[in-house]
Length: 293
Image 1 (cartoon, one colour):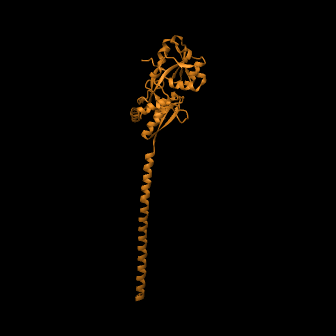
Image 2: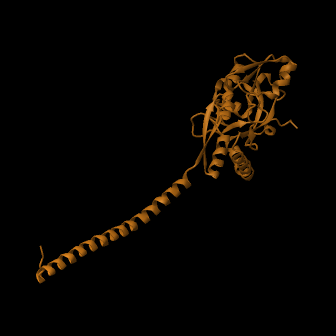
Image 3: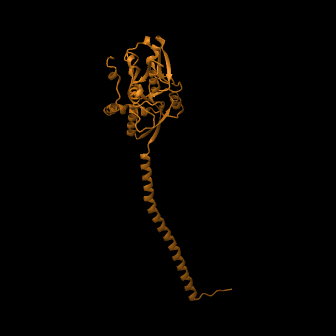
């Protein structure tokens, strides 16, 4: 069988061939245009997303948990759900702001503070002191910042008993979990009974109720509690009974750099911290016990 091609048939084939080429070229060209268009849209979008992530990461603050006693120790430090938690809190919050970090406070019994830091449940303990060893762990040593603030270990009695002597004492109230180092020797020497109580307020009430003759309570906290409770107005400090200055530190097992940064911050912001102390009405030991060398 043979085929004969006329001029018209050849012309028709050429036309259809050109049409097919035109269609293929159009498809390829359109795909390239669409791809370029999408690229132009995606580039600034990706840049914007990248910029958003950058800002988000920059603004995000690393959080640290500080274990604190559940006992209300205002105006030194309070774990109560209140906007103002005291001088120690104000200092730590200003430090956190300077470091672009955030502190969260976890109130708990004093006996749980060290185990919580050992287990990693909290990153820091505040307040802490190298001489407080009641619940210290042998697992890992605590590292301490420089002093964050200074407190006063004082002895409160009835105002009429301000000049009471050790020989006249039979019982002294000491809040549960506290390391009353100033009372260790007098208790042993004069056979004074140490009476553990729930908190600082209970210690002061024990005096007015006649359960004890004296109570070991931080001076600034004690004065604040007395000012808030008319039933405690008959209490004063006994200048001849145990008293001393006590430093409050921030401690940690692993966040050593932050402890060093806090120590530097306190030295650099000495004027600001002194202003805060005066605003809170916190007194130093030498301001209260004026006859002490």
